[in-house]
Length: 67
Image (tube, rainbow, N blue to C red; front, top):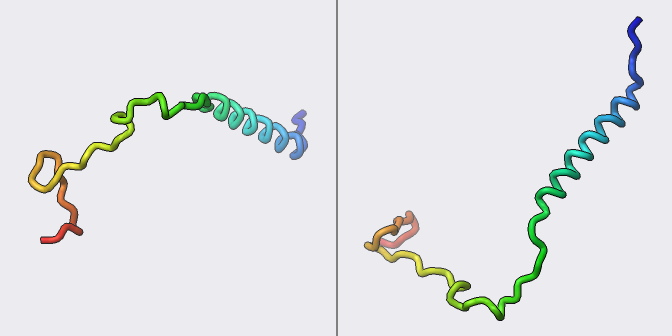
């Protein structure tokens, strides 16, 4: 004799499984929450490098560049 499950039980089980999966994902991707004091960092490490100019190695010409 085959018994059927109530739809509410199936929905509750799915909600629990999905909630647990989301909880595990959030807990594992938490990352570091410590603050960084920028006054102790080297100012040169905060600067962006100059992009290559036209004719230099690594330069990629854009279609918006003037001729």
